[in-house]
Length: 563
Image 1 (spheres, rainbow, N blue to C red):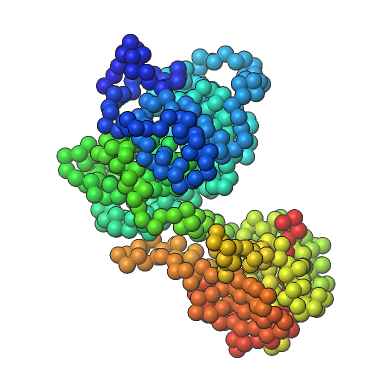
Image 2: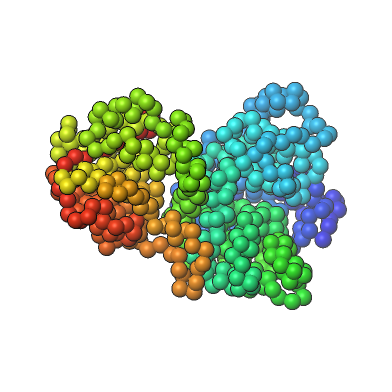
């Protein structure tokens, strides 16, 4: 339904002057209107109370109509929680003058920063003036946020903000969203963009398993079609679902972050698995002809549920927590990075990398290691170097601790090592075996406590790995990376990671352990004299020394200069 300007004034819509209101459908649809919705002052009080759970529920359940003027204040307030940028017309105007030489809005489109995806400059219901204003906001962001290299959602989100905000307020809101690093709200690099869609697919396999199994069957068992479908997951939301649904999703997104987008995407996948192949629908022809991604977009644009029902389905997905999402995202990040590393460190590329002085310890560092080490030859050092995450090889190694110089004391070990991240442990046994571990976290994390005040037993991340150097050279990485590559998830949930496979590092005043679940890859006593090595579920490794039990001749720990 379209409305004339005279009608709009009577209803009192809360859109900005940048919106072409007459083109917005369903303006007077009151099915979603909550007559008991909170005012902004009431909502602000909840947000200021630091009762996070109450604030989340308020935003999920208070179904303000998508025309409600509350968002002109609510959305900037939510974004203000993420960063320090305040709306400042003078600062923004000065930056516009610096970039364009005038504050007058041009009558033609602007050249956009490279982080923008040209095919996804969705402006929803902005007027032409509003669209060019969105381009100007994005251009100023490109100038003030030079570290953002790829953020395809930035333009649609800025356009959405301009439906309710002034130009300088929309800029401040976007700057705060982009500045938030923990958690990241929108992708800012191509790597992170790839990580998010793969994470979304893995989350769907774990938490909406039956829907994914159903979709894969409907796709003829073709997993590549499933990957192609999920590679567009963000656009199901930002270019698919109706505008009133998107606005309600954004209410929650600005409070809870990307987790909301994952939940909504999983809910949409669930609905599509049930209704996607139904006959007589707008998307039937696309589905029948194998254009599943196109069918999904058409399905989203004709979504057969209300905004409230979509959110109820999304937040009704059980056992989906921030912690589980963070673990899955880390797992995907390591998987993607390991694939990139594999392409550099395997086959002919291995020689290419080994001959690159940029990715090797400097001659000076090699000389220092050769003089100080009682365990590593230069050849062994370079072997370990090819196993490290590429970003770590940019730094030079430094010997932090050795039993030959600093004595055999766990207390001394912690004093010299615990604040460094990452570290490499190298053990040489009295039998001549040489093995060790790359430890991704600081050893001082052994003292961290959870919300209940209980000290955590294990810590570290999936970048941790163990290895042998003598008598053979072999690396054992986290099993989660191998599971992450398994594309076949069956009815029994094949592909899930057990808790016992995420036991990376542990320590107290009496021992050090690396790896867990059925045994330890490395265990050492408090005197750094005796130890054990066995199979563990974290790395699915063979014992790192043939006899299992060992006596330590030398323990060395390396850190990295600049880290």
